[in-house]
Image (cartoon, rainbow, N blue to C red):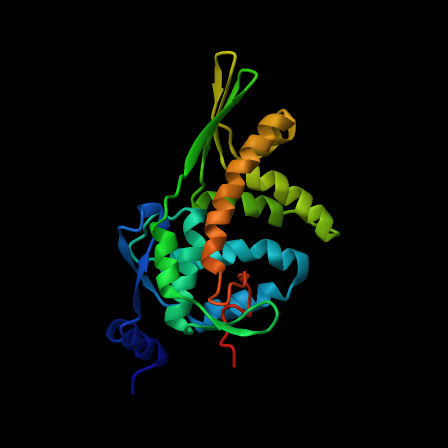
Length: 241
């Protein structure tokens, strides 16, 4: 009799668990192969959803890890790809039916998702204020992990404290280069956070405006057929039954 390891290997090799996924940062022109979401991955989402402030800090890294583990060809993904890919994997793994935040049954619309992916996505930008030039680029999920790890290493007593730090961190992760007075730097994550805290508020608001445009694009993929805005959490990755 074969052991469990051999049995699982046979399943992995013989059962087609592949999903064709469209990726926004590829202008919707590429269909990449991903693996379906597993029970173990679903359990990680549920566990961290229920673990309060620290669990919610870890959730983005859980989603990023799913994208890496289920991406057998190792394609580079941006955070602007995250919701689009996860929604498509959710449909393949669980189905179209979903509960909105009010508990109403609705569905995810694949045709709408495809239309969103085909809409233009500007992944980078540059802003200047009083001689300070900042170059921005939508971060990869690997860079995103680095910034969230910095947050994980800290303790937050209240949700308000976390929101304040997320406000800074979300802007900092988009920084790739800063120029001023013929000096040019490419800051590391900790330096990026320090810069965001010290840049003029006017320039920081320009950065946040671009970050918001990426967030708005990403959140379009979490709109259900009834028009409800959904949230990536344990409920989203469960059936509505």
